[in-house]
Image (cartoon, rainbow, N blue to C red; front, top):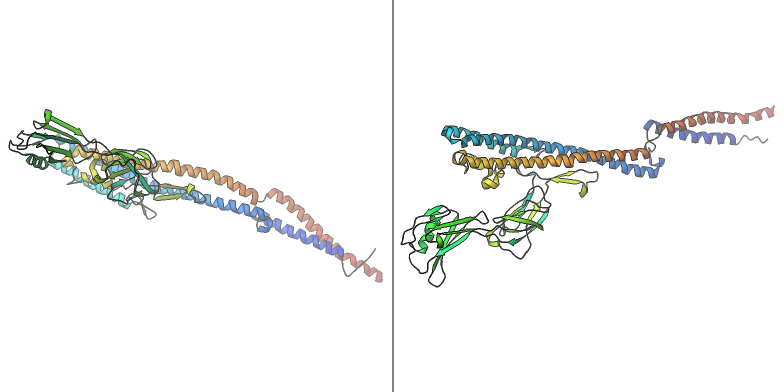
Length: 467
């Protein structure tokens, strides 16, 4: 056999195999100690790319779940404040009912009820103006839809509920609103002399010497809510015209008296009608109310001078910023994963406005149009509407919590579990399988060490030839 001392090939071979085994042992130890099959890009480059994407998705889903939970906390904060408002409104209603029972109450009792009502209404305003979550006001209107009227010459008022989308809102008038209108007259100029007439239940005291102009002046001075004027048709006949200030079917006019042909004249106005954002819109006087579409329940009040059916001509006078509370409920924050909700202003002057007008609930405070001294029965109606306003907002928040937030959390939880399982299959090590390999490597390590030692000793046999 050939014996060489400069290059111990057997030892080099044993050393090289032992080195590879040592590297494999270190990698196996790293996997077993970390629990990951991929600890660096060199372990599995393609697997690393895929698993990092999945890991980012899982992180995003975790944050989306936290976002949804934060949104639930915000909703519950607002709803808790609204619950207290409902409690206050119920107590106010009881006070108004007590005050309406005039037969058993004196002025002092009603004044005491009024004092409590004033305090409760102030509390409602205070709750609306101070309720905050994470520094953001919730009930003072700052979290609601905003409406910007771009052309105040055509639109005098606009309001919107929770169903909306940001952008310009188109509207068109297909049916003009009208006032109730009647006229009566005589065949020759001069004094009318027909005695008294009654306009909507108010009697106008006339004398035989009254001219048309004098009758008009008397009507305008005596009867509220109507406008009267006189006009000649050019043939010597004076006519008196009376119309309501208000528009629509709720604007009725009844005139009785001997000055009217047949002794009675009556008329009723017509409501406006048209479309809002392409959806049908019924009307109440000069106010269009969306019945269908994205902007359902939106109200647009047109100015008298623009109350004309333009053959469906569409106008863009209103810009809406909708859903001022935005929540990212997904891992990617794209448009499909953003939920929005608006919370209407819950200030006292915004509750019960359909019945009380612009003052809202403030109209039942001391000195208001419908305080307990002036009209306790009407105050009850206003309070009922305010209760409905608050309850409707609570229901909206509850529906958002249940149908959007809680269902989103449940769905995100399932999605996260499945994606985490996918990432685990790629990145996590199979401990049992790796232990099998590690045991094999330990045996190879021990065998390689022994063989290297044996290979290093083998060349020493040449010393025996030197005798």
